[in-house]
Length: 305
Image (tube, rainbow, N blue to C red; front, top):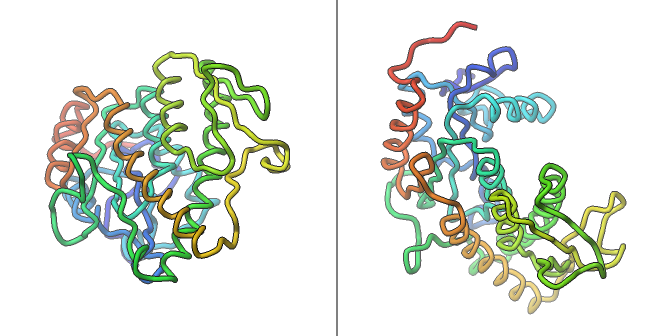
């Protein structure tokens, strides 16, 4: 298939990447199926029309002309993040955004700006404010209240994200001398406690941001060796097969954590001239246009290898 967009597609040309486009990729629909998120397509169409080369991690034959290959595209993604001059992160009301939030924190740590954080509305063919309460975007996973199959799919995602965020934070602690991790009974007064049976998404994001700003953060992963894998990485320990009551209570936690995480991103990241938080496709395009001009890559001229 022919590529639809001007995407970074090979390591030899990865240094030409101008925008790193991250965040909400595949979404769980109301029937529990994993589908390609098309909410950002209009923005990607605009970038292509402006001859901007960008990396989009949501690799699919319909848009890129090929399937995702971890061995090829993961190294490409890491290199593209380093090369890009502007970041765009989409946060969809349909996906949790746990790893995306930590990626935003890492970019904040490393001053990888300008950055545009785009809270989308969950609909590909309209451009409205996302679902919100008191001005803060909400996490509204599709089908979670109406479909048993969707609930099972979201619960599986909940369990995976809880562990993956812990794994990501351990890696971050290796990079930051302001973030110290302890385990088990080593907690002290003032430590931030991460228990194995709660997700703690906002706590982990908060720890990353505080450490980024130079504040000494002590993070304690509670629990014994049974709550860690064979490499010592702390696990998110919720039942594999919960009862109906447990499932509903745990998914309530999932929704609440997702909503609070969206609020935390806006509240804890220091918003400035080079970090924009926007809520519509049109405002995302305007912000990207400004940031690209600031970086001196518009009007665009084709670069030489």
